[in-house]
Image (cartoon, rainbow, N blue to C red; front, side, top):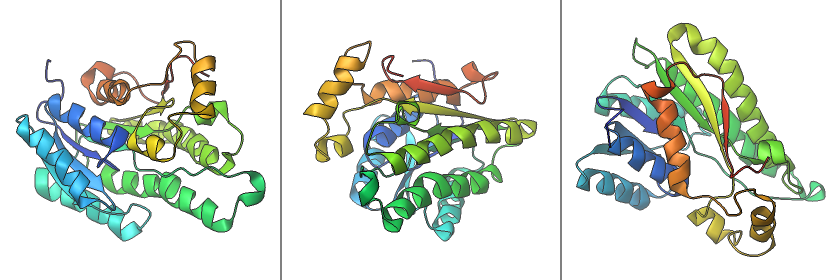
Length: 250
């Protein structure tokens, strides 16, 4: 593989498992030094780091719950301390929990918005102060739900529609500083989270596979490949885009 990200520094949030872990591994394989952010499982983050180091890459685990403004600052500071100015930020940290309208509570709302939207904004604002003078790339992990709008996902879908909108705004706002901002919107991917929620089998998966033109759910590698493209100079004239990696499901 040509190392498109040689010498670059990347911060990937929520990178201890699932899509985030795969993104961290892919960016490292492309030559980037990667800060692997986690909020609860140090052990899982250390495993991701060890996997990168075993392949000759450079990585460090960085703790922080991004819904907390102090932690958002700390995560960026730790990344800069370890590797220097940032070139790539991947906002992958997020929570999802489905609920019908009558079950939505302020707690449910704030748990989603505080991390998926406010956390993304706080860490982006902090990281953008520490970007390389040559600019760089912010990739926001949104979701296919932002356009699919499945029932019982009002709050989660609202956070992802917000991520799409924020990506479009920041692409314009940060363009003078040569920072590109794009969103990747995955379809259903068989991650640990999806499996533990029991969504990888049963009605939800059957419905998705039957309505997806490519007829299957996605793989973490397929999301990581799209992120690596946006992070690299191959995407030097691409900003403000929302790329659906959903097997054609819209």
